[in-house]
Amino acid sequence: MKKYFFILSFILIYQCSFDDKSGIWKNKNYSYEEKSIFSEFKTLSSSEDVFSKIITLDKKYLIEKPKKVKNISWNDIYYHKTNNIENFDYSNLNSLVFKSKRISKHNNNSYIISEKRNIIFSDIRGNINIFSINEKKIIDKFNFYKKKYKNLKKELNLIVENGIIYVSDNIGFLYAYNLNKKKVLWAKNYRVPFSSNLKIYKNKLVAANQNNNFYFFNKLSGEMLKFIPTEEITVNNEFKNNLSINDETSFFLNTYGTLYAFDNNSMKMNWFLNLNQSTDLNLSNLFSGIELIAHNNLIVASSNKSTYIIEAQTGSILYKKNFKS
Image: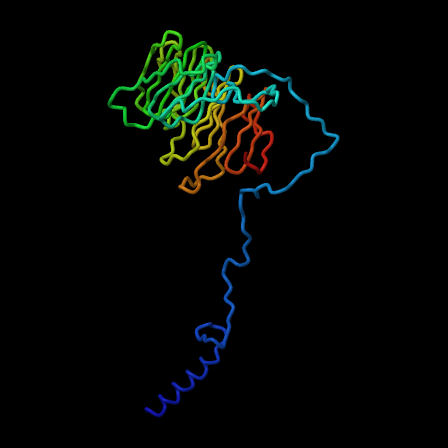
């Protein structure tokens, strides 16, 4: 019996050693190419390749130059309510008109504004500094915050109109400061940090907070006129909610990547459009963009990968190009 068992075992081992199909027996002298079950499938993707071409401009193409503008004020951090920049008249003299010592011992916030030859800027301690170009010195320094907020790093969003500075911050305060009278006209605490630029439409102040809530406020009192919630994300990145106003419409691009259009008079939504190509909102896939640009009946919006030309009245995408600003 043992003899038959030995012979049978030898035959099985001998056959398996020459197996070249099952892939069970492998050694360094034998190479076997395994094929994935997905090897014959094509990769499908809804996203387009990123633009990577150089297009030569036709020499016959004429670019229409807008009329030159002599700019004497900068009331909005993006210059204009539309966030669009005009064709400024610049003499290119490159001459130093004035040089001062450091005018604030604290780090300044990102943007400055100006009105009637007064430079207005803020710092991380919450100070609003007014520097007179004519007098070449700081003519006013104001701090709204009490002692319990002293050690908090403050990010102020500023806009100025007719000598009144409107301010929102990353604590949740919204207030108005009169430059001429040097006093606070009104102040409100909405308890959720504001995270957008400010816009003014007639007697309305337009803003958004970090939860992507859109607001209309009464600029004369700070009272909330309308609150409109939009998509909220749990992780914030460097991109902040951005606002632009064109005629009677406010455009709002939130951190989720959705563009909204609101009627400034009725305070109702006209339309919305999502520009975020991904539904996977992880840390490596957060929406990013730049400020909206409104021009006539068009909106220019830029996302992580694409630039869009959008019809302002309907929200229809007229053009989509695979490059980002």
